[in-house]
Length: 184
Length: 184
Image (cartoon, rainbow over all chains, first blue to last red; front, side):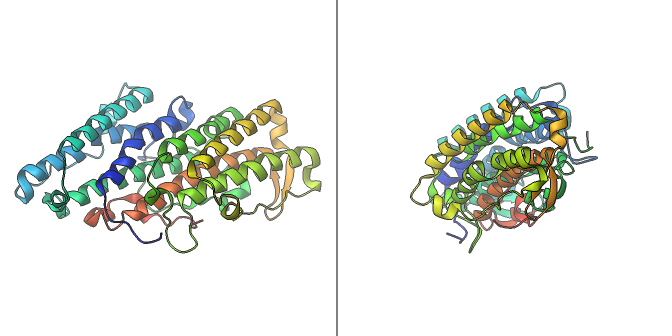
């Protein structure tokens, strides 16, 4: 089972459909000491991460899929604003963001289903403003792994708070050794 | 908000209480292609990770807390068997393991609450077989971060399956760069 998998739309959607409930189960009702903490200056908290996912639902994945299907490689995707949530989340509670993420994701998956994509559609190409030519299946796989990236990041941000509190155990706890990606 | 937090029992328990529902939301009903895949030879799948957490509920965290409270530093904790789940999980479904984890965690948190620990109890010491003297608060913080380690690992194991499928996006997706801890 160690070989990497090919992309299958239904399998990707099974992951995408579960992310809002996963974050909800992990975060809703947690004290602010977990939700608003980050890994230091200019890094993201759980609150920031959920805001980023909300913004992605609005402007990134499905909008790009539509541009790809309508314009192919002739029109590059709009660039994604990675810090937009800092403004958009202001004044909201984490619970509002979780609700918003759940609703937007459900709408986006419903729209994706309605496209009734066939295997040949998944090989259609669009143009990423920085990465160049990409296929629809690469876009949808990236959406899936993007969810996993932020679930992964969230655990690391939370674990960081107890780095000192775990005393000598810190050397055993893998999440405390993670430096595998940027802090945003 | 970037400073590391001190250990607070109620805050740690808020995280510990949410882990079974988090894993349930992420994993229950997913196709085996996600649940049984790993990162290569001798690494763990989602199924193995949940089995490991079940085994930890039975033999690791609360049993060690009891040894610490009863024997102090005079009796080291029993060593933890990190591969026990390979045998214990045999023949079970993921859904059974998720149910078991949820039940055992609820029982353990109920037992922890019943100890009615006071701040001075959290500084009491026990002896880890390899790490030496540890305090009760370090043990409980390690239990919390151990949960986060495996939630973190799980996202990485799943993301790995789509490393190739994401095409040029793979360089942008942090979870695919994680090499911060062992694969088990």
